[in-house]
Image (tube, rainbow, N blue to C red; front, side, top):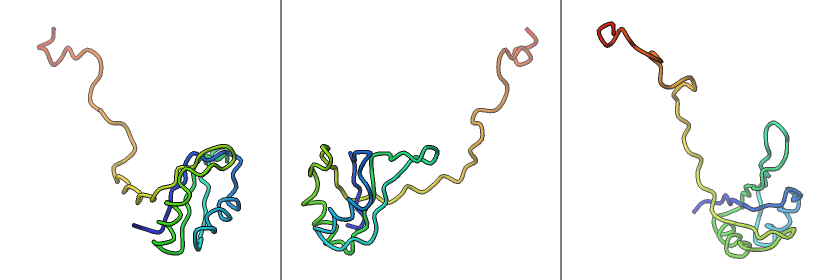
Length: 108
C-alpha cells in the first residue's frame, strides 16, 4: 500500500485546509490537493491526500472512510497509481474513403 489516499464524494465547499485538519487527526499529512476543473476552477468533488507513511495512510482510510463532512459521507481509499498515457497521436481514427465507393465495385 502507498501513502497516497483518494478522497471522494466531497462537497464543493470543502477546502484543502479542512482536509488537512481532518486527516492530521490520523497521522502526518504531507500534502492535500483538491482537484479542480481546468477551465472553470470549480472543484470536481474529490481530492488526494499524501500521508507521511503507509501506516498513516492505512489508519486514515480505516478511520475516515464513511465520515460525514459538510453533510456528505466521504469515500476514502488507497489512491491508485496513474495510468500510463498512450503515446499515440490524438488525431482522427478511421481514415480512408467515406461514402459510396463506386470505383471499388467495378464502376457500378
